[in-house]
Image 1 (tube, helix red, strand yellow):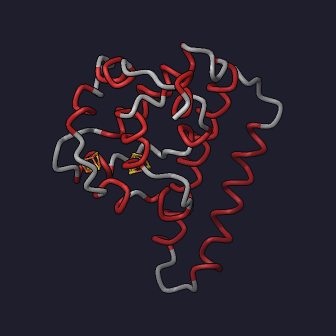
Image 2 (cartoon, protein in one colour):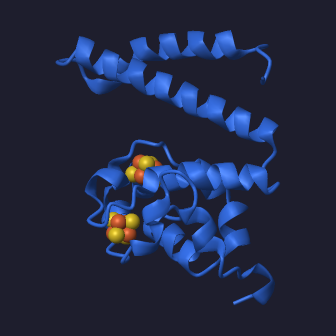
Length: 162
Ligand code: SF4
Ligand code: SF4
């Protein structure tokens, strides 16, 4: 392990963040990763692995990783953790630490948060379309949702990044 990137205090710093207090009691069962919708589609994303990195003190590797921003904040991991680790809140804390320590600028973080909001809105439109036409083949039902999504994207065009 690279000593320059190893920080034995990292886990304590994470555990001092609101909602992340339980991070040190993870026993690596992998239930969080097994239920995570992001891990299902992106093999590099693993809540269990991120927690191991925290406990091993891999501060730079964790806080500089783009994987921090892949989490959908669905809290499935938190709901099923036998140790009540609340990994969804751990991710939120890691993002704040990454910004505070200069790995991501506030501007980049805000752009990524807007991606989150758009993604949630898109999911809502897709669910609505599937419910509105439950008998229709899924691709056809989703065409309607795509129109609403296109309108949302158009509304974002030209909007300042805040
Ligand atoms: S489900 Fe909980 S205890 Fe199991 S690996 Fe995930 S965070 Fe750790
Ligand atoms: S909150 Fe994030 S890490 Fe947890 S299950 Fe949802 S997407 Fe995965």
